[in-house]
Every structure is written in structure tokens, then in C-alpha cells.
Amino acid sequence: MPELLTAFADFLFPPSADARLLKTITDEEWAAYLQPQHFKETTFLSHYHTPAVQAAIRENKFHHNPHAALLLGSLLQRWNNAQNSPILFIPIPLGKKRERERGHNQIVTILKAAQLESQMNTHLLKRQRETPPQVQLEKTAREKNVIGAFTVATPIVMPSIPTRIVLLDDVVTTGATMQAAKQALLSYLPAHCRLQCLALAH
Image (cartoon, rainbow, N blue to C red):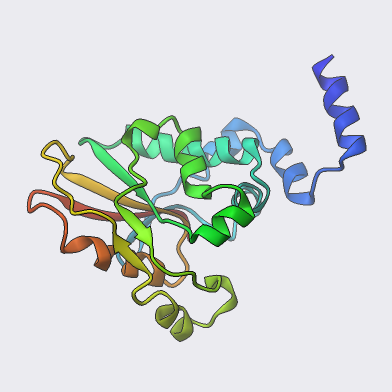
């Protein structure tokens, strides 16, 4: 019966090519996409040029697709489980206008799908001005675009804050957004904290 309902829904509302692709990926195939590597100062978990990874990121970001969020969340969950110290995740914030347009912050959605909501803080880092999407810009313009885009909403004074803080984004391309967010946070962090940048894909 569920399969029949799904087929009927797909007939009425045809899924995108990305959504159709994601339905064909097995758990074993998806697990193989977890390949942590480094780009500049950021650790990334998978390769964006992989069609399924690219499809999952687009479906989660622009279509709020729960299946895509679960897939991406599983990569993050597996990486987190392999770590040997507690982590506080800080998702890269969106501007208010863009978050309204999308209906969610795609990074928060991934953290929730990974069941890491209790390790997430969405209040410390804020985007203090709207910026054009980075994907539309060349490298130099991307760097200028995010200068001063982020601010820390309140000083970080929590005595129980973990020693590792992880800035999280879905995709790192040039690293400009991560660098701008990192610089905004650094001067506010307690001395015992280590700041790490992490992306789902590059």
C-alpha cells in the first residue's frame, strides 16, 4: 500500500531528476561517499562532483527534501561518531530573507536529520547583512562578498562549552564563507576551545 501511494504521489507531482536519482542509491553506495579530506582549513566529508552528493545537497537546500537531509545527516552522524571529544556544532547562518525564501536553514536541517540537535547552537553566530549567493560570484568577488557578513550575537561565556567547536556548512568552494565566519568567532572563543571548519562536500 505505501508503494502504491508513493507511485500515485509521484504521478501527480513528478519528482525532480535529483530526487529520482537519490531513490536509486543503496545504503552501501551512499556509505562509500564518506571520504573525509581537507581543503585549505576545512575538512570535507564527500566530493561535490559525485552526482548523488550534488543531488542530495541541492534537494535539501532548495526543496527541503527529507530523504536528502537524512542522507547528508548520515554522513555527518558517522563522522561525528568517529570523533573522540565532545563537539558543539555552529551552522553557518543564512540571512533572514534567504531563510524565509528557502523555508529553512539547510545546515540546521542536516544536523536535525543526524540527530545532533542537542550539540547545535544557532544563537552565537549571526549573519548581520544579506549577501548575494556565492555561487554567482568569481573567487575574488566571493571573498569581498562575505567580509564583515558575520557577527557574534553574544559573548561566549558558557563554562561548559566543549573544547571543540565545529563550524558547519553544506559545501565549501573557495573557503571564503568559512574564513569570514571563523574570523568573526575567533576573538570570542574561550582559550580552551579549538575551532574547526567542516563541510559536507567540496
